[in-house]
Amino acid sequence: MSPIKKYFHDIWLGLYTIYIGMKITFAHLFTKAVTIQYPDERLQLPERERNRLFVNMDDCIGCDQCARACPVNCIHLDTLKAVPGDIVGRTGVTSNGKKKALFVPTFTIDIGKCCYCQLCVFPCPTECIYMTDVFEFSEYKRENLIYEFTDMTTEQTAEKKAKLEVYTKEQDEKKAAAAKAAAEKKAADAKAGAAPKTAVPPKAPSAVTKAPAAVVEETLKDPKAPASVTKGAKISPVEHEAPKVDIDDKKKEEPNGSKQDNGS
Ligand code: SF4
Ligand code: SF4
Image (cartoon, rainbow, N blue to C red; front, side, top):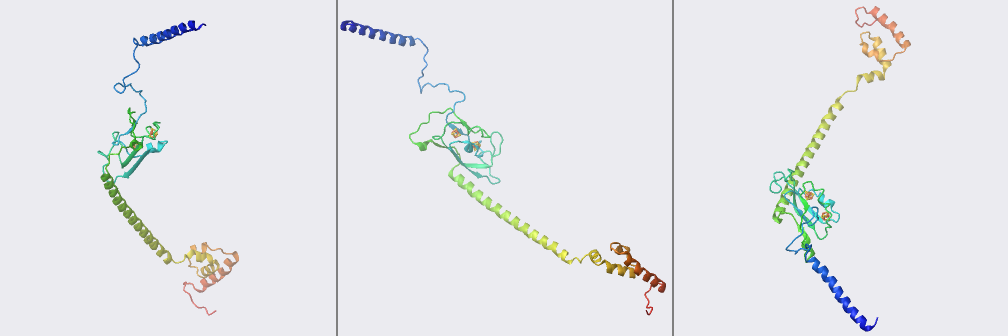
């Protein structure tokens, strides 16, 4: 292509590309706009969007399940046991009727660490931790991204702590006293149980079985001896027969049953 011809070709090409571009631009003048005038205009967020978390402390029971479920450990909470007679929160119960037994003096979420996985939301028994539609919370300092949700003041926390300490001390003392009383009772019972045992005389039957021959001999000498005594003793036929003669002789000699000296 000659230089003159190339010159005019380039001019034509430039005008043609301008025409193509302007054609597209003019075509968009008559189509519906897809952009919005943010922040004056906002898009409708999807139903299950994950944004900044919020905790409704009126319903939080301090069970710690959200903190345990968090994979990046960005939730931290402290709890204090409520002493009998203390009401946790405004009513002492959650909106679904669960009794609140713990004060929550600290409940922080480091949203700068949060990965918006929503794993903390599902295990919550009172559904008080949830994702909101707030996604504009940029900060210049990272510390400002640590959110504190508790509604307890420092003074309230100190008061509840002191109450709990007193109550715990009282309970410990009561437990110690009860344990001491139980130990004393046990010792007294053991002492009372041991005394009669030592006073019980040795059992008669065992003495009888230990010396059967002597008992039999005695029994055979005295025909009035109770039958139960002779029953348990083992007697050989020879032993049993020999004294029988003596008994008969004795009976003949002592017809009235009284013992008399025959001079033998
Ligand atoms: S959304 Fe995930 S990362 Fe964020 S606080 Fe909950 S569990 Fe932790
Ligand atoms: S799981 Fe729910 S009720 Fe339990 S500590 Fe977390 S926010 Fe509170």
